[in-house]
Image (cartoon, rainbow, N blue to C red; front, top):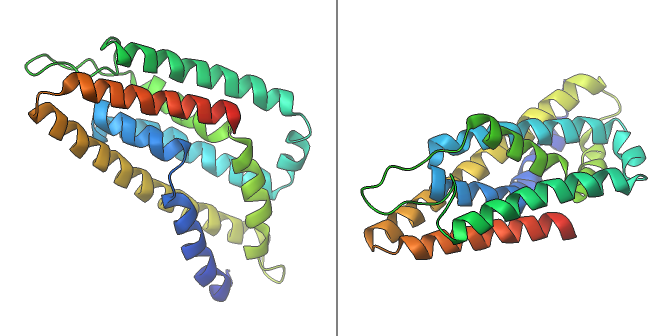
Length: 207
């Protein structure tokens, strides 16, 4: 079904790629601060769906065609980046659903659908992700074995590694948020989270 030697090289390679800070990891950490790990899972589901879609289409050659039409990516990236920048602006001024309230004030949670769609858009709108999967995945597919079973196993491994990495970042964000709240530095935390959100938006535009 799969080439075990190739799998032995594939797992550490993609583990390193997944755990490296990027747009999705930064978003996971920010949401961990502001929404908590459990709520951030909804963003993770969307991101994992987006990554799986990108990986499958990239290996199938669709990425080669899509990368020839950067305008599609550009508009998708601009829409996602503007939304993140708007959220960051609200957080900077301690407004909106992602802003962290003062102690004793109930937190307003972001809709699950919005979290899910933001994770999906962030994953799919990154052209570097498409190019990366198109370049790195094919070498790990053994031409002597059935194609689809191998691809399914590879995608499952990618999704698992992405999930574990985002969970790590979200947990770190939650711990950081708890520390700042205990120190009564909620305004600082809101502005740190807002800065991270601005960074993801800029990353998306310039990526």
